[in-house]
Length: 339
Figure 1: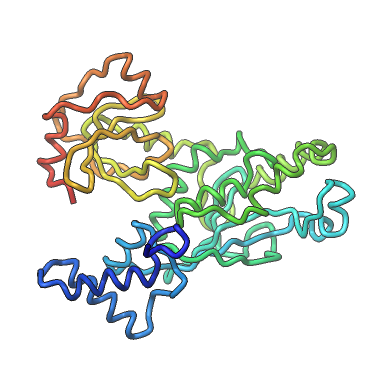
Figure 2 (figure 1 turned 30 degrees about the vertical axis):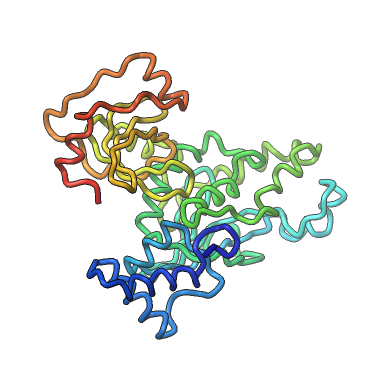
């Protein structure tokens, strides 16, 4: 009932929750956070009336984390030709043939993230594509700069490489979409996301495809930082996912981070023991593509459990093996989890 459009908790709903916490007779930490949120709101800071909050956003607001503006920089790689000739050549009318970069404005540095064979972090507006034709505001994120770069370098770099760049099926806009799911759990605008599918079947697009792949997927080191284009950083991260390690992961793209102890691993996923919101131990499948970071390596002498072949195959085929025994997550409890 508090969500204005089904997307999450509305700003009004968040304030009501904070008011109830403030007025509660219990002296809990959440009461202090609620008072701080209400004080900032009364001072005209922070919450916008039309904003919707996910569970992750709600926690960040309550913890006092700042939010940062996110924009989509849209570059017309046709340099104006699309607006005049796209209907004739491609069968659709486009204002531009879009290359995009995701820009986040952090206090210490604004960054533009983009895919061109490697994954780059550049000063906004200084990429080889010149000046953006449009800057589309996309809202705000609570992610810090290092969190964003870690996700780019350690997770997305395995999916977006020089070898698999394709101007029609695996390009900069697909990368921007994946990064936006991490930053805000939302897609980039549909007009940008669906453009490659609209032109894939045309003879002109097929003819230009090899040349465009060579150009748009072959950028070398630019100012700023970049991945190596091979996915090596992501592979090294996965190699550190060992039984007994504590990891942070999500179960869906852009979902809230979950912390758990690795029980066993397959080629494309690992089996994780974690606590649910009620404090009970549960077994979850953590896909390799949704790994965020390794928080701690396994403790010395951690007893590696031999996973039966059937369970290992099921793990990689997205079928959840049976739940762990009572002692499976003893190290998780001994290390002071849950939070």
